[in-house]
Image 1 (tube, rainbow, N blue to C red):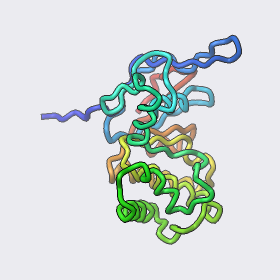
Image 2: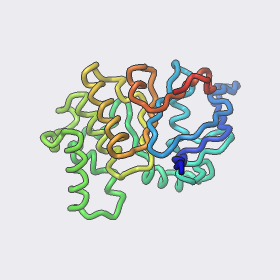
Image 3: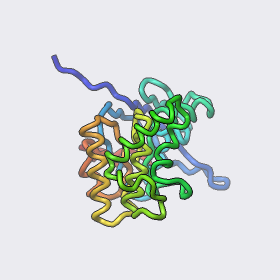
Image 4: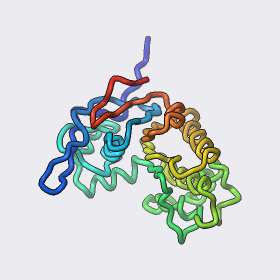
Length: 231
């Protein structure tokens, strides 16, 4: 019997626009597609195509004008702001282009931050953080501050922070955009490992074909619409 992988993200007729003065500027038009659990999806398109807006909608950072967006069976478009914030904390791991680390905290403390909202003890938090940093190859950088780390190391700390709560989805917005070629390749290999070895569902926004090569599925956006180009 053939087993089908259930979608973890279900997007139906999603529409999003922004107001610019007296004008309504359409950003996304009638977006419909699914993301299977354990998939690694790259959202590609030129600047202004709507790919980062779509990522923000999937991550619950923004809300659409219309349409539905279900993640793990929950229609996040119907949640209040407070419930949406709680949902994000439990279900979404964020990887940003510029890392978004707290400069006054060490690598260990940055990764520990999301766990402070859980019921884990200090010892349990320490075990989780140590394991996540070891997975990123940063055991010897635990007590270093972001200013003492290279760009690639800072991004690895950010990835460790993103996975520390075992979120439903990982979203990455141009995670290699601020890195040199060697560091970018290392980060992409780490993200691929999270998908391949841990089964993490990953949604990556990029304009770089080399970054998209690692993905299992590629979706192209053009002027706010999904095009037929896909693999």
